[in-house]
Image (cartoon, rainbow, N blue to C red):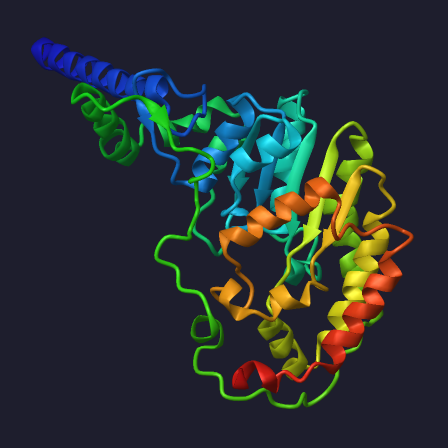
Length: 357
């Protein structure tokens, strides 16, 4: 009996030691930057936004950030750094809602008092959204990486997939002579390679734009939804942090997207949603708000787009230059003129022309 107890104790001790040693690999290497930044001699692949972005926000050295959905993934931090003379990170959250993005900006401000500039696309289709919506349809969210609870870190440090699929290969690469480093933020999440652009990619098998069955109005319920979303997820954080400059812009979707909205009878409502959102955001002097929806040559050229919404990285580069120069910036003095031009175009455009070009 005594021998059995000793054997059990010995087995448990050995098992515990093995677990501690294996977990130490993850803690020391830390591929998701949960405890620290990268260590010299190892190469860190940036390829998991929701798992790595929190650590980047918490532990990296930066004074500017690019954040957004897939509309932000093709930005190059090297271009932002050169234009604004900053040291920036890029932390995109594909499909992320206004709340998710705002929460992560707030976290960046909390953990990095040096933060002075934020670049963020405001996805046009998310202006009219529930203020508290979080995308839980994109797979499980690694909450254990985002909170400050050390006990649920067991989900990270005892994760065999991270250990055997990430940490051990990183050690093997280092042993074979691969130089240490990290994926550049220019390349992180960039989806340009292999992506097709142009009319066929954008329109697919569409052959017509049907007349709308009814026109959708801008009703009080929609106005309240926009007010809460923009106030809670855009404006309040800017007001609370007057020393941070927020460079925000409304994403320039292609004319094909507007054609789809015309078919649905929602163009006028979207324009009213935009007008109300602009009014709310222009209350803040440190929100530098831009829109490129009246760059009609660009949005009507489907060679710039891979679908109705997503444009190529050359547009991202151009947008950064516009943010720096102030081109297409909306102000209290000019936004009504901008809205009038925009409304006239999208309400009267012959969307059948898209199909015939």
